[in-house]
Image (cartoon, rainbow, N blue to C red; front, top):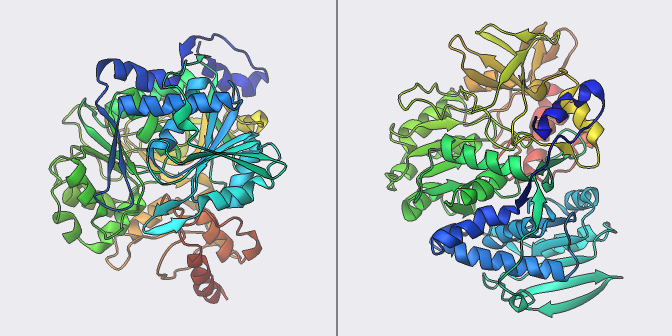
Length: 572
C-alpha cells in the first residue's frame, strides 16, 4: 500500500500510519546530474525574457553548477534538511536553481508568485515558518519594473522567523552581483559575489519518498491560503509521466509552458516534469500582449516550440485581437497545444485548434489542481486517431479513477449525468496534507464523501463516458430550484460575437433564490496568471465591498473600481 492510501482513509479511522518509506537521491539528481552524465550541453532552460529576442539559454551543466553553488551557499548559512525556504522571484533560471538547490540539500521550498503584495507574502512566510528568503532586487513584466526587494523588505518586518534574505541584483545571470543580506536586529550585512565563492560540487541529501519537497499556497480566493504539501517520490514520478505522455514529449522537443513558476503549473510543467525527462523548457517572463498580441506566436517561431501550454483566458484575449497576429508567424514546429487553469469554452477551443494549430495539432484541455500535483483528466494519451471533443477534458490519466457523486453522497454510475467530481483511489502526485493544519485537509478533501477525494469541482459525464468540467461547485447558481453550472452559462455567452469573455456570478434573489444581472464592462478582474477572480465579483454584486480582501494578486486592481461603479448602479 502506498502512503497516500492511508491519507485517503484517515477520515474514516482518524489515525495516520506510515506504511513504507524508500530512500532516494534528491530531486536535483534526477533532474540534473543524470542528464549531465549523458548530455551536459543539452539546453535545459530557455529564459524568454520580457523583451522579445533577448532569450538566454542554460545547459544542464550550467544549471547543475548554479544549483550546486547555491546549495552550498544555503548550507554555509545554516539552511538544513527539513527547513523551508521561501522563494519570491519571477520566472528565471536562478529561480529554478533555487528550487533545485533546496531539494538538493533536503530543504523544502515555498515559491510565492512575485506579483503578490507584501502582506500576502508575509502571510505565507509566517505560515511556512521560513527563516530564509531568496529574491531579486527587481523584476520586469510587460515593460513594467517591479521593486521586489522593497516588497520583501516590508514583508519581513512582520515575519519574526526570518533570519536572512538572499538578494540577487539583476545585473547578470550566473551569480555576479549576488548579495547575501543578513537580517539581525535590523542590521544589514552585505557580502558581494557570495555564490562565486562556493564549490561547484554539492553532495545531494538522501531523502525518504514521503519527505516534503515543497509547499505551495493557494491564492486565498476562498479564505485563508492553504499551504499544500507535496512530497518527494510520487510528485516527481507523476509530473514526469504526465509531461511525457499527455503532451507526447520526445527528446529534442522544446516545451513551452507559459505559466509562472509561482503556480503549480509552473512547478510541474516548467520545472520538474520537463527536467526529469531531460527536456528543454521555456521560462516565460512576459505577457501575452507585450509588446503586441503576437508575442506568443513570435516566440513559437523564434524558439521553435513544439508543445505550447497556456490558459484559456489568454486564448480568449488573443482571439479578440484577430487572426492576423497569429498568421504573421510560422507555427509549423507546433505539435501539441494545451489548455490549463479553467474550462476552455468551445469558441476559444475552436480558434486555438483551427487558427493557432492550423487544424493539425491536438488540443489537450487538461483538468487538474494544485492539490493533484499533475494532470488528471485530459484527451491524451489515447489512440492517435481517438476523437477529441471541443471543450472537454474527456479521459482520466493512468491510475486516475473519477467518480461522480449525487447530493446524497451516492456514486452515480450511469453516463449522461452530472455530479460532484471525486477521485476514487490515491495517485502518486496527490498533496499529502495542508501545512500546519492536517485537520483542514481532512475536512476539505476527505470528509465530504468518505473514501473519496473531493475535488470541489462539478463535472458532466457524457453518453460516451467522457468528462466535462462544469466549474467549481461553490460557483453553481441555484435559480428556482435548478442548479446551473457557471461554466455552462459562460460557454453560451462567449459565443456572442460582441463578447470577448464572460464571468457568471449569482446573487441572492427574494423569489428565485439566486439571480443574475447582466452588464458589459471593459475588463474582468484577473490574477496575473489569468484567472478571473469571481470571488471579487461576487462580493461586488452582494455589495460587500469591505469583504473584497487582498487585491494584490490582480493584474490591474483598478479594474475592480470600474466594475463596482457599473454593477452597483445596475443592482440599485
